[in-house]
Length: 348
Image 1 (cartoon, one colour):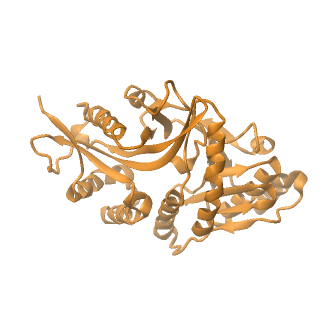
Image 2 (cartoon, one colour):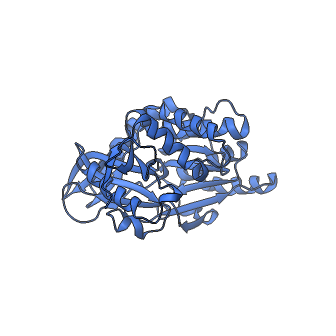
């Protein structure tokens, strides 16, 4: 029986994993452009400081380019509640799980993921691992990643000016104004997150058996860089500047990413203390999507019983069949955790 080894990829093996996955994840990009994208994203601190590229190879040939399966893990801060106490640690988010076609059906991905979970559990401070399954709910669940509610709210941007104006007027609701909104850049968003993170920690500390990945400036910078790459490739837009808005008067803010590949404004983080604040943020997001030529807004883990209750009629709400939010918790305490703030910023 072939002895298998999980190892951190050599630079040449990293390049080979990019080449292997190009046909699957690089649609619309040449191989050279796909490599450029990966290099570009790898240059940002979120990846440079936190990513590990893993490969499964024969133990007898550890530097081979005939890679059996591969993935990445991104280290990021997270918090959990254990019997009323706040636990702070690291979460290792798994991404880019890929087995070349000639090696599929042999159990290599299963073997690799089992070994990856063992490897991240051994990391200092590790208490959890997340991933987003595109192969249904069972494969990763059997390996330790439990599927959590994966809800998306979608809002289609009206094409006609009259329909758009009607929607915006409806959303103004009882506030009757959209004043007080200021745009956010990556730099100002970083300042805002200094106040958001303590809020999330306090919520987790008061919610039994809960868990959350923390939103960091490095994470949003990486997401925005991805938007910037596709803006240049698909729209010849050389520089994006706005990554969200805030409305201090309503204690509300939203951070987003432009997905020019899919034509979607992806809401990465949404917080509003009231329905009025949610309306203001949604109006700003609609205007941004319209001006960028995007056809839809997507929001993960929408608070439909809270701040979005009054506007939920404008959304199509669905359980996702892909990007299924999956969590392996192995920190202090026993039992499953409820994943809060399961928003798109936690995706990789």
